[in-house]
Structure formats: structure tokens, C-alpha cells
Length: 356
Image (cartoon, rainbow, N blue to C red; front, side, top):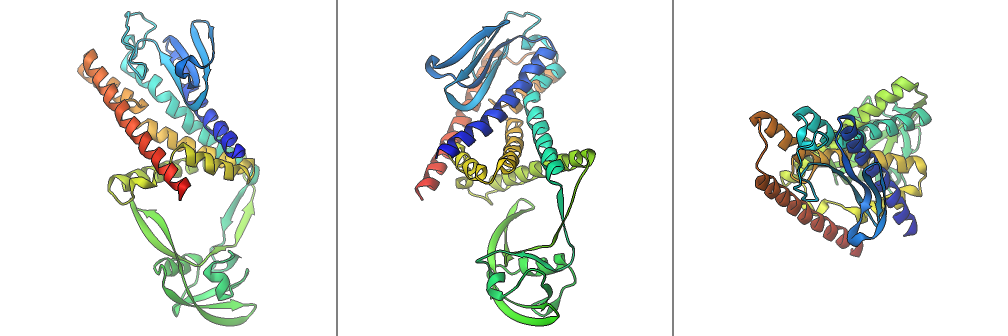
């Protein structure tokens, strides 16, 4: 439990700090005054705070989240004070406003790229051998019951000859929880057997598809990478994480995935604790994945999120005037209500999972 809590605080603390630092630096870069910079939420005045050069810096006792208060913007604080000073948010042009509000997302994406690039540079990459040769057999999976061993070459599935790993896995994936016939070469001896595949789920074109599996992976050929290739791989992995997050959201919107599948801080803490036991590299990998998710969610055009502020800035830029104050307040309140309802739903899901 203690490991889970500490791992959660570390992961979320770093991600939130980087996100809010992005807003802070972007605001400063275009001459906007930052009134507050908080890591965690400071409920009921509980926490640590200190004024420095016109900005109140603080650490709240509630570790979930963070906050940067930019002068002259209607945000979570619902502060409507606006003096029309040149160092206030509303005095800036559209591009400067978008830069300030999107900088947190940009920082989270950059962090993910750098973490994944670091892990690649440090550990190298494992490239799968294209042959239908077993590199590893997982215990308590159908392949172990079948008698497959490392180094065995699979020759056919259901009497359909396979010449490479893709052909072999395509045949197995198409038969979830079905009995399949397998023939393989074991040290020059041809063997035969039948086994019932296990079922797993995977996102394909915004749909959750059931696939068959027997619990094997190919031979992995390890090689080192240089700095530029590691950076390129870090970028491409971040794009894949973004794509996975997008497809997950689309599956949720289309009803292909239940809202009960959403996880929140309790499950993140549990996963972080389990990941931390696997070592620092595993925890960094989890941090990169959550950083991408945080970036994607924040850029959604929902009031209360960075994407909502970007959308308002775009609309005001197009119509060339400010949206009325009362309208902005209503939009912000509606967005915060939606986010509160979503947070409650996620927390209920987490608690139900723990009970089960």
C-alpha cells in the first residue's frame, strides 16, 4: 500500500508539475502575469505557500492535480477581475492565448518522447524474428499444455501451412476459444497436437475485437540504438500511445466499451505500485503512457480543460471580439459540472474494482 501511494504521488506529481510548468513558461514568454503556481490542491488553506516576484507558489496537501492561475482569465477559480492591463491574458492575441493554454499538453508530450527515447537508448530494442519460431512459452497457457518449447517451429494451424509468424498468428487470432490443430518441428521431429485457445481483447478500428491466443512470442533479436534513432522511436511510440488513447475514446463514445472500464486515481495508484516493483524503467514507461493520456484528455474541447480554453480563444479570434462574461462563466460552470460527474463515476468504478 505504501509503495502504491508513493509511486502514485511520484508519477502524478511529476506529470502535473511538467504540465503546469508548460503553462507557466508560456505565459511568461509572452509577458502574461502568473498569479499562482500550485502543485496539488490547497483546500481550506491547508498547504505550503510562498510569494516570490508577484507569483504565489504552493504545494497543496491533496496530491491529485495542480494549478496555474494566469492573470485575466476565467478558469477554475471563476475570477472575473480584469483590469485591461498589458500583462493579462485577455490583452493578448489569439495565437498567444492558444500558446499559453496548449503549452501544458505540449510539455506532457515532450516528456513522453524523452522518457521513451531514454528507455530505448538505455535498453536498445528487440526486433521480432519473422519466422514462425517460438521464442518463449508462457506458463499456464495453451502452448505449454500443447508441449511447445522454445526453438520449436510451427508448421501449420488447422492443417493450413504457415511460413512466417504473421501467417501463424492470423490463424490463431481468428479462433478465440476454439480448438485448433497444430503441427510443429521439434529438433527435426514433426509433432502434432490440439489445444483450446484463450480469448483476449484488442482495439481494432475503434472496436473491441476478441482474438485467440496460445501464449507464445517470437524470437527477439536485440540490438543497440544511437541517440537519433532512440529519439525517433520515442516520437513514434508517443504517436502510437496517442492513437491508442484516441481509439479507446472512440470505442467508449460508440458504446463498444462500457464506461465502467474507465479507471481513476485509485487504480492508477495500484498499477503504479505494481509497476514500481518491476523497477524504475517500468515505472518510467508507465509515466510516459499516462503523460500521453493526460495530454490527450486536456486538449479535448471541453470547458474546464485546456482544449476548452483553446476553443474559446479560437472563437473569439474568428468573431474578433470577446465572448460575453456571463456566457464564459456559464460555459466554465457547465464544464466543471461535467468533469465532476466524470470524476465521481471514475471513483465509483475504482472502488467497485477494489471490492471485487
